[in-house]
Length: 243
Image (cartoon, rainbow, N blue to C red; front, side, top):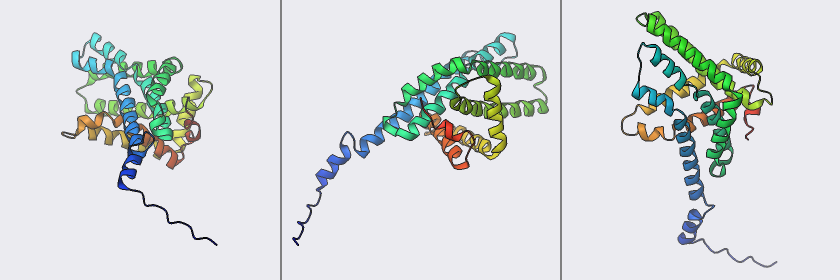
């Protein structure tokens, strides 16, 4: 039996070359961070109409301002759908995910399949805006508006998740699937709200808040997928599929 020759120790230079290789851990990490940045910036880009409304018009109890505010929210639902789809691909494939392309492909798809949901959110926002304009001095009205906004947020996330799993996108079927999934796992919806609240709080941090916002949407979406996986959302298995 012959003795095996001792293996040569890897030099520090060799280890450094391995880290800096195109397929090494350093390059993979940099690409993954860039993918998070790209998805997050794409999401903020979809909200440019809402930001432009806040900057140029803002809250005013006038018909023009209320209608412009509702119209500025139309891209929100397709943007949420695209964010969930691209972040699922990003979670699975990391730096090689091409998540930016997935985001905009999903956004274009959602503009067709989820147009009814986007219009519904716009109509609800318009009705709430008129209620606040007429009865905004009432504390009960403010609490009601906040409650409706929270319910709408949960339903939007659930509808986007349900749309990702269905070959047919009839509004009644998608909405029913989302409501049933949330009713069976209400703690999953609470985890979504907690993540969103933490994200909003993180963006208000001094110094680092603005920089963190450039990565936050993708991080929140990945957190939502992780919660769905861990808490076994009924729609979970299907939302793992990516385009």
